[in-house]
Image (cartoon, rainbow, N blue to C red):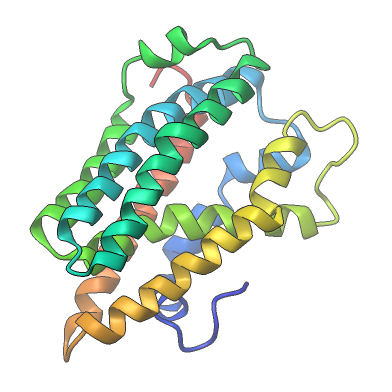
Length: 226
């Protein structure tokens, strides 16, 4: 994993190792790797992931509001634009290959697990500062990179004929790995500016809860209609 030893992310992950493994080695993840995940489960996940992206954009808009330097505001605004203008369009295009059009995505109700994690992120950002917000986002941003990389490297991962090979490659690929590495570096920068004695324990609690909510998102994916 690309998080340097001693980085804030590495320390958070180590402090929450049990929850982290339950998330990154979840049954949903394993079944993506061996290609055995039912189509209906993946479609359900794709719909909720689209709705998740909308809330993700709101989280970065909140990051812009919470930021105190022009550079940080610009970075947050670029992230909002990337999600709204690029990532959602790419997601819609990918979903079309699974028989889901944009109307089906936009008109679907949010699952409880989707609301739980995204609103938790927004609440941490509203009640805390930008470091709290990005720690709450880290299990998603960095976790998907770790999951994608681990699946690609796993000799048990089915390559030929795996309907989820494109999804795995998307998160294992250099472009997304660079995004996640940037998030790790950003956490360290914010930690240097904003952390103080006793704050790490509170950040661990946020990270652990966000990680559990990500695992619950996988649980939701295994139960279409939930």
